Length: 111
Length: 250
Image 1 (cartoon, each protein chain N blue to C red):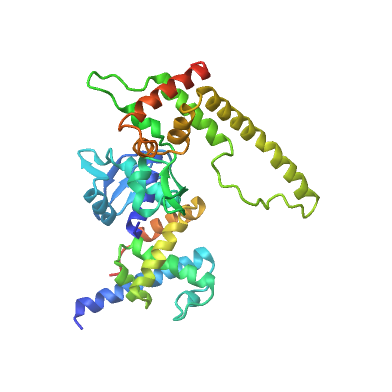
Image 2: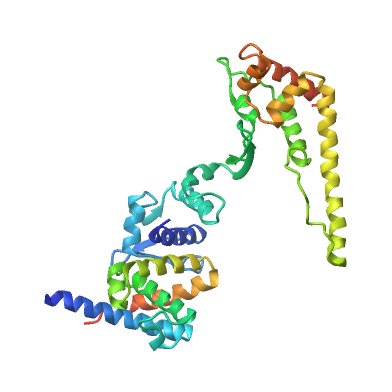
């Protein structure tokens, strides 16, 4: 594996960790539920979808990079982005995600 | 709509709601100055997507919306809220589409999508001859539309079957059933107005009014049904509408 590629994967995984941690804090969901290999309960699944959406939107990662970082399929991430984008029609939820998105944007890329 | 379009839709709706100057940041995205108490941030990928579709344009002051932005939003809004199907967004930009059942020639009801604002008279009213004069006068057009309105208010022309809403399961339901009966007074009155207008226009003319305005039969098929010479129904319709306008006192 070439070095640059493995570095990129390392960065993506770090970003995924950060976004999971943020969602875990903001939505009060256990972090190990978000990083679980199986779906888990509806709350955990929703939190994971938010985390995937945030890393796609705030870090501007492609869907397949997000999928790799979360250990999911590319289409799973696409589904999550659609779902969360629809949920953002609700103003309260939209404001909350705007705040989280801006927070993640401010973070410097891992060195 | 794909996910990028949905995202763009949300961002542009906010931008229209809170108009603000957008200035480029280091990453190629654009940030608003927060006028109206709301900071809009558009990431580089979305900016690229929007410019490619002509929804945003770069000029000397930064990023701005174009004249097609609002049209695009209106199109997608009707798709998003479910009033239009995904293939008819352009039609929904100007029309108010609705499902309607029509009785087809082979004797079956078929569901079709129609523009509820369209009227068979409207097309004829809009046409002008080479001197710029309308074939139908304003009064004739108004009379025809009035008859159509009354017909729409009445319960005629609707499929009536068993109505199970009024079955009384307890007292409160029985009360609402009686209120239901009150609501029909408007419909009964509208029906009376339609019947009066048709009676006043006299035999033959009332059939033309009924077929063209209320059943929405085409003039061509009316002529074929009655073995009239072609393009004659238009004249008969004009005479019928002129009589109708007299009846309404226009």
